[in-house]
Amino acid sequence: KVSVIRSKSSPERDLLFIGGRFYSLAERHRQLDALQFKTLFVAMKDSYGIPTMTKERDFTVYTYKSDKTQAILQAKSAGDRYDVTIFLYSQSIFRRIFIMD
Image (cartoon, rainbow, N blue to C red; front, side, top):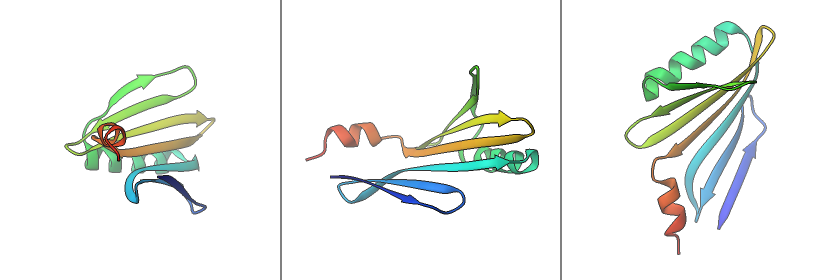
């Protein structure tokens, strides 16, 4: 059984549960100023290490990996503001999904 719970907090969060166990988190941060974006970026770096960066046409993707967690930060600038989505999930999520009972 797969369940997604969305919290309407700030930031907005989606929690993914598979078979009753928590597997991933998605956070949406809207309209961050440059200082808020920098603070979030530094916190991610401190938690998950130095990211690899991929520049797309409309946004930038930063990918972080730690021993057990993979994190993806997607940032889109809108003038002097940033819309940011963060995905956090277990390194083994895909293996776990495919071997579920």
